[in-house]
Image 1 (tube, rainbow, N blue to C red):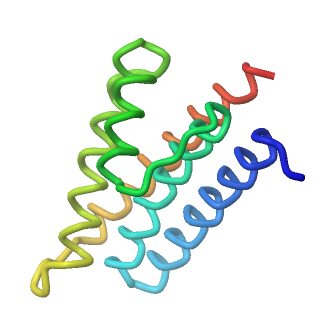
Image 2: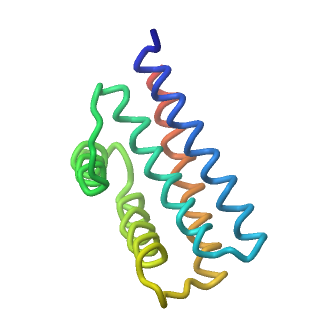
Length: 130
């Protein structure tokens, strides 16, 4: 039976796969998909932390709220991660649901860098907990 640590690691691997997919989609000039995958990178990062708490949420808004309350407001992570979430969540939503939304290559490149930073911060935190 998988442990909470196994689930956390699995979700972190999902985050890494999403980041790789975002970079690949950027190179193919598929900016909407790259934006989507960048968001899901941070989404899986947050859920990797929750696995260790034996928590999960059905709604993205609940995932974001819990992350901010447990990890940002307490100072575990810098407020910059909260700003990254806000931007990526907005871009992902607009890219996925607004028929005429156009995300630029530069904007996607920045968001991929932000997702990579987010992933790096979560990985460092998880390593420090071992």
